[in-house]
Image (cartoon, rainbow, N blue to C red; front, side, top):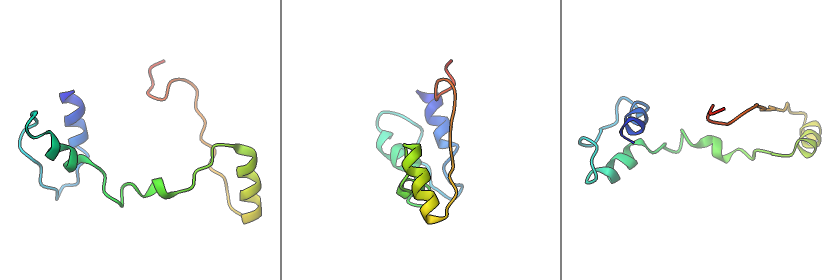
Amino acid sequence: MLIALLVAAAFVPQGAEMPAAPSARTLTSWMSAIEPDDVESAYRSIPWRNDLAPAMAEAKALGRPILLWTMNGHPLGCT
């Protein structure tokens, strides 16, 4: 748990003020410090498609390209 928290803290922007050392008492402040802001979460506003055929039809009608993301195995690399 501590390792995951420290790794997450490594991705906090340089100008951000970090709370005191991780503990049960400072958990809330740590969670708010490492939570992504609106700019970092902008990808969530993209209307992603998870069905290829309708996505291809929509892309063709709009004249847009398709990003096809495929993978084999466990999403966390635990194969």
